[in-house]
Length: 293
Image: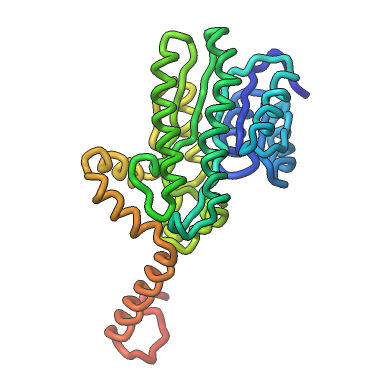
């Protein structure tokens, strides 16, 4: 049951992954929620958040469409409550070379990651500025810090969000509204499967827990920080290195990480090395693990 005395947060892309974990952070800190996504996982997510004691309005909507954003705005307005925090998290990616990927899929990345973010931010942040109170969190990515061969539209969309976040933060610096950017690295969500990037080096490599990423993002939002690079120390090192490396070098590095099939080739190379090590250490027919027992 919604409680008008509690603060209200709006979280997009909240059915799973980082978005769901962000919603859990808000619920655990006494917020009611309006959550939005377009997939079947939204309703189970809403029930889980209600079990945490939050009042939850779940809006199943396609935010890549103008009408979808307006529907969400109308549902928020129907609560009759001010929005205290907005987490603009919904996003999608497309792997593969630009000219080999469907144009429709790439334009959907632009519509969801960029256009809807600007649309929703304008509609929900303006009342915050008028009230002189509020918090906005954008889920960007460390992909924003480098050119992104083989996921070029996605990386560019995250660079847009990062720049938009910093610009908006400066515009609102005297308004009582804070703006924070969350920059995760590879995270254990459905992103790589949905983007068709599971067979890449980055898609098959180590990933951070979305709960940890969301916690860091929530804490940064509550502290009014401008941004936070969440997850492993590797993410922070990569982000720091991006400040000094030339774009050409960063693009070459990212191409190796995101090239289709790179993960499979990487695993085959590791298997070959393991095989060579096995045949060079004792009887090749001995299946006993020398470190067991």
